[in-house]
Image (cartoon, rainbow, N blue to C red):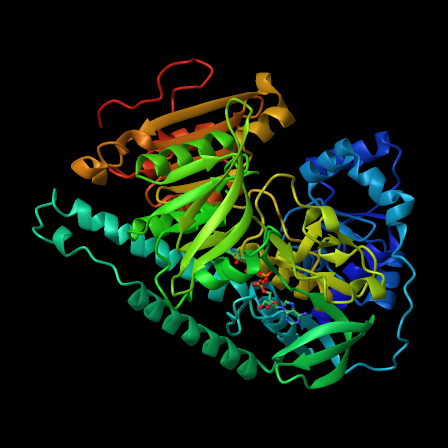
Length: 639
Ligand code: FAD
């Protein structure tokens, strides 16, 4: 209503007019503390005492408030602040119009130098580069989103909820062997969804083995897997999702163009549909959400005979004996489920497994996968892919160079039916004409667009979200190319662009899971990153090996029974858990639950005081007492 709007405007006015703005209450010790800290740092600020507004004012001040701002009661201002920041406490602090938070966050920002940087930004960050503007009086759309994947769809629908005119473009360029798919981006078509379903297919194969010791007879003898049936079920489900997304856009009033977009000028895009028909549209704001695609190794025959994850999930024929090249999470997940459904799999690894993840956990995953029968070949680099026999699948020969333990280099080859390249991904920014409009990409980081808080560093009306961004506020070393990250960043960005929201994406403590045959869930710091950031003396690691109860009576699991493992990395000074790692069945479900605790700043004591659910794998994280530094065995005894 009108009052609410007036209060929101008043809050905006305070924030815009004052470099350091504190919404405070006169009796609050934290407000006093933060003001004292700013005074000692010789930083000027402006504060208003919400408990005194509209009540304790002198007649003169009251008249001025009535005259200028209606009668703004402190409580109403606080409500406007809650709407804007989702923070319901004081002090509530803004610096150079950026929301900092309360007392602790401001003191932290003072300590880290962030306050000083905000007040005196370095020359490079002061303003956006001057970019030739189109100088349009009006635009076809308030917002154009390039890319209808996880981030783009979320952003466009959220923007539409503010009554904005929104257009989303989505176009899939076929892979070298001609695979293509529908609306929804990587996650739905060639990522999370088919991957998790294939992972499930492989787990079911394991349960069939388990069934013998649980008293079922002959289930395991019927153990046969049909690739084409699995693909048919999964693809049918994906098509239903593609349809649902199209209907959803239409019912929400978002214009959907099944066309490839590229920039002609900063606000103008050229759209090309699959028949080659072109048209131009303009947008006041533009969000780039183009995601990424798998890389090829750039060797002879790679694109002609090899496939990537973009092809695998809809492959019309059984891949047969497969060589997976790479050690990314995509490589290990695909290798894992192919092995689980009974295909022979070999993995060619250039150097280490799961770069960027905790390396102790990565090597435990490698040990598990080797124990259940997958062959890893380290230091093997493919040099040429040759077709020996056409067919579906045909016969391929992968030539490689391998550095042997002796240091000698061996040139050899391995024959197989399918070669799957999973050596990393690159952002789809190459053909957007970004250089022509003054946007820089980071070539060293997969051609991603340089952003700060999802806004392009170069052009103020251009934003980017999801897998295609090189985001300055992301913590180093954490895997953040994830669907929920793209969705949340897209929704928050739309709110910031089109409402008064200042809430930013928090890239810290993002939980993730690698769906290898034994799942690995992680939140926060890896052991390596924690050691280098906090130092050995300041962290303690609690860990345990455990046997999942459901495996304990299964003889075919004998060799892997004790391979489940969890560890918590704890900051000794604050007792806060800064790293969470679990390798176990259902680690994805376990990790999601604990992510809330990590986000709320859980301490080791909080974990210890949490009552476990017995008997589960997750309960092991509530009873960790053995530290790594003690050197005691992490193996668990008894129940
Ligand atoms: P995308 O979803 O890739 O969408 C971008 C869209 O833009 C695509 O449809 C693309 O075709 C289109 N496009 C590109 N250029 C243009 C253009 N110029 N014009 C028009 N359209 C264009 N994440 C998880 O959270 N959990 C998982 O388990 C998981 N598993 C994965 C497994 C695999 C095999 C892969 C490859 C990824 C997985 N991911 C997972 C990652 C997740 O899929 C991505 O992080 C997420 O899809 C990124 O969303 P996005 O919106 O940034 O891009």
